[in-house]
Length: 123
View (tube, rainbow, N blue to C red):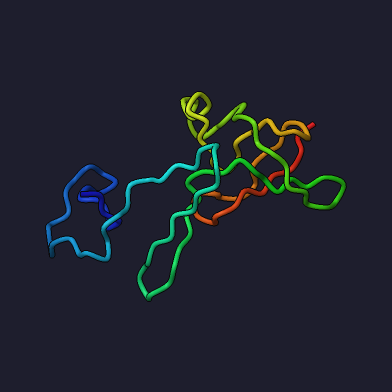
């Protein structure tokens, strides 16, 4: 089970003494990667009763062209600095270079946590 609690190890490599067990609020979710395809958004409840949106699939991006955002169709992922294997799997993350109808664009937001894709043209 993934946890968002501090590590069991110190920076020096020594162990912390266990003071308590894991709490349910510290359990981490498995990553839901954003792919190219028909739009699909996952909504889930988080602590405090708030709703988070996670973009699972999308084939449209809001691209900044001449100072205005336009909806453009996404064709494929060209480059992804987060992980080189994300390119062949067409996974979108912040900083990924995508091929669109308007040309290559860089993703400037976090689609997996915001529910949409914003990008700017790369020259």
